[in-house]
Amino acid sequence: MNKSFLKNIILTALCLALLAVLYPIYLEIHKEEILKEDLLAALLEGEKEPLYFNERTQESDCKAQGLLPDKDCTPGAIFPNATKDEVCVSGYSATVRNVPPSLKKKVFAEYNIKYPLPFGSYEIDHLIPLALGGSNDIANLWPKSAEPFPGFYEKNITGNYLHEEVCKGNIVLSVAQERIATDWFLIYNNISEKEIKELKLKYRNWADR
Image (cartoon, rainbow, N blue to C red; front, side, top):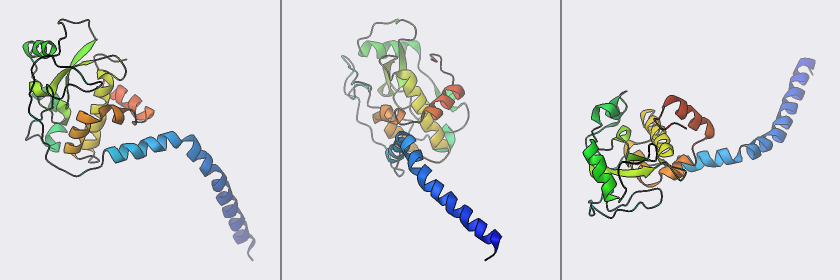
């Protein structure tokens, strides 16, 4: 048998043996990260389907439901004709943003929050972000607090993450809209720390922290 051939066989066998030892260790070290990736992938699966929103049935005494708004006051709303190609144009959100101070005050009043507020304590949040085709209709607006964690800053990071995934073609726009309106905090908790750091650097928020 050729010595070079034998040497290659031995080296291959050693590499396979080393891989057999190291791979389980790698899986154990990265187990949480792998589980997050799997859960995130499952959350974002789905085909293109039209979204249907409930009618806004309440205009006062609105109460946030944990990390989500009052569904009767803020059921969500989108620009029905917004497409992936439109929302993925750089600067799109700035061209459609239209929430005057009078509307902001009305939103705070509906949620029984005194206005003006300490700087950085609340943000008038688009339940479905403009960057995902959300509209400026009051049915899509609510006062999202900074605290407790995760607050509006973390929701903004989630919106930016979903926007990038939509524009990469990894997520259907309607699926991203539905998930941000119902499971944004679960999605945030499963974005890797590395991706969150990259998003923080790329999308500077007025309340950056």
